[in-house]
Each structure stands twice: as C-alpha cells, then as structure tokens.
Amino acid sequence: MFQRILIANRGEIAVRIIRACYEMGIETVAVYSTADEKALHAQMADTAICIGGGPPKESYLNAQAILTAASISQCDAVHPGFGFLAESAEFAEMTNACGFTFIGPSPDVIRLMGDKAAARQQAKLAGVPVIPGSEGIVGSPGEAQQQAERLGFPVMVKAAAGGGGRGMRAAADKDSLTAAFQAARAEAKAAFGDERIYLEKLLLDPRHIEIQLAADRHGKIVHFGERDCSLQRRNQKLLEEAPSPFADAALRERIGADAVRLANLVGYEGVGTVEFLVDRERRHFFMEMNTRIQVEHPVSEETTGTDLIRIQIACAANQPLGLTQNDIEIRGHAIECRINAEDPLKQFRPGPGLISFVHFPGGPGVRVDSAIFSGYRIPSEYDSLIAKLIVHGKDRPDAIRKMRRALMECHVSGVKTNIDFMLAVLREPDFADGNIDIGWMARNGERLLLPLIEEEKADV
Image (cartoon, rainbow, N blue to C red):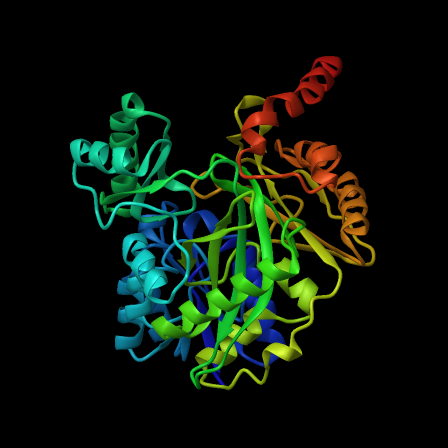
C-alpha cells in the first residue's frame, strides 16, 4: 500500500480523499493555490504545498508544479480527484514517468475513452447500443448538414473531447444547425483546446442513467448499480439518486452488463462510470465514459455500503477488489443535492464571497461532503459547488422526506445559494412520482423560481 499520496485537487473532493487516506493509514500531501491558502484541504493534510496563483492554469492545471510538489514531498502516488487534470492522459503519463502511481486508469485508456467519438466506436465493438450519429468527426457546417439530414432532426452537436456539459448544442432544424456547430466548436476549443465535433441523433426527453464500476489490475470488474442524474440544468447535474426510479429490473441488468463488458474490452482499471441515455421505452444508449471518480459517487456508496475512494486507491496499489458482483447489494435509496454558491434569481450567477455563518444538517442517514466553514471566503477562480448534501432512506419516499428536512436545516449566510431552489424541486409532484427527464428543468425552472421571487420582494 502507498505510504504518501499527493492530492492534485481542491475543495470537497480533496477533503474526501484526505479522510479516506487517514482511515487507510496513508499520509497526505495537499497542493493549494494562493487563493486557497486558508482552504480546508490545505489545513487537513499532513503536508501542504503552494503551487502557484489563483487561476487554475497557474496551479491546479500546472502539471509540472504538481509533480514537483510530489517529488519534494516524496510521495508514492498522485490522486487527481475530478475535474482539472483528472482526465488528462498527458498528466497521467507525466505522473507515471516521474515514478509515481497515477490513481486512475492507464493513460491509453484515458485518451481512448476521453475522445467521445473513439469511445463510441469502442461501445459498438463491445456490442453496447449507441445513439445513431456521424461516423467519426464532422469537419464543417456543410458536412454537419449532410449528416443531420441522414440522421433526421433534431440532432445534438457534441465536442469529441467534451465533458461536463460543455461543447454541446442542440439543433432542431437545418436553419439552427450552423450556429449550433460553430458555437459548440468554439466552446470546445476554449474549454478543451480541441475543436473536433461530431453529431448524434437527439433523443426526446430521455433519462440520464449511469453505472458506477470498479476494476482491479487482476481482471476483476464489478458494478455498484445505477445512478439517475436526469435532473439537470443546461447539461449540468443538479441532483442524483440511486437507484433510478425509472429503471426496472430488466433495464438494470442490461445496462450493468453492458458497462462491465465495455470496461473489460478497453482494459479499464480503477473506478469509473459508464453513462447512458434511456428513452421512454427503456431502451438504453451509450453516451460516454468518465475515467475518474465522479461528483455523485456518494449515492452509490450509501446504497451499497462501500467506500469508493478506498477501493480506487487499493486498486491503484495493485490490490485485488475482494468483491464479486454477488457481494454488492443495493439497500434503500440515496439522493444527493449539489449546493452551489449562486443566485437562482439572477440566472444562477455564481456568487463568491465571505461565508459569515454555515450550519449543516445532521441526523440518521444524512451526510455532507464539503470544504466550507464559517469565515471561509469562496474564491472567484473556481466553480460554485460548495457542498454535497446526501441522504439515505429505507426507500425513495423516505429519502425524499429526509432530503426535504435536511435542506430546511441547511443554512449558509453571507452568499447566495441554491438551497431554497433545490427544496422547491424536492416538493414537486413530478419529482415525487419520478417523472423527471433531462428536459424537465428547462420546462419547469422558471415556474419554480416564482415563489422565490415573491419571497425576495416581501423581504425588501
């Protein structure tokens, strides 16, 4: 097992990894930017090293600075968390070349599955259903028009190197396709340094359901059931739950088997997630694979009683999983709400600033993954996620009631948050009935804001 791990990340995921390492008897080294000098992850780690300025390119995206910190602190391994360099094949190669273990799959697998067009081809080779789309990269608006006419509108224009909802645009007809193509390509180039684009048929009102899996270096692969991530705003997940209220036993078995088969084909190692879109007839289609731990991993941990970070670290240390598929039992229901420092009444604009007071909920079945505290100043350089509120109940109705109660107990003062907005979502009959698809928020978001607008007027 590793003696010392450097965590190449920040915020709640860095804190989450530090906690797992402590329980495993592993020393931790945190890296931080000048904007994160007083951040919780820098305070909790055994050692903390400043690696640069606040902008990510000067610090958390600075591979050379991170690996220099790993060297001077004599680390065995580097954990990338999620975001930043977590899915950079180049960073994984540099990490291994410097004599450290990259806690994740091989650089070749990261590169293969990070290219959405190539990943799609791997899924087809594995016999996993894929959404009808272009055969490879689409190089021009004219070629996009030809492919779209073959597929039939509406279509989705997607970045080959995309992720996190960026580099994606929908086109309902030929008149909107050129603008969608150009916008997606420009966003992809800015976000990923890669402007390659491909097309997929746009499924109407699908569910977003994904499979969490883990694979050791001895050929063993298991999955931990599915998560439903259909509640989204502009392709960004807001809430995740496990198991899916839409999946039946047959679908659950099919997508689990397909995820494992694809992971086996590409030689996957570590933890990862295979994401699917599921239509109204419960037909599933491969969307992408995330070659890292995900933001929503706690709901799978809560329903299976496992620690996915510890499993991830153990697999990277060449230890066997010690689990079979029969050992994994789904118990109860879990829901995760992402708490963001943003103002829902101003188009969810991020609102960094000083947190004057914070109180997180507690009680049986309530978990909070966060790195904020009273007196913490949220930097403007990073995303707006400040906490993940997770509940586990005996069944879905119990989990919904528990989440409503937990949201009502959650208070963050000094900055605007989306807590009241998420509480409004949890009170919706559609949510209680499980009638949520990825377009639900676009259809209902403005209506949900009306009571918040009236409340703000009353407070003035």
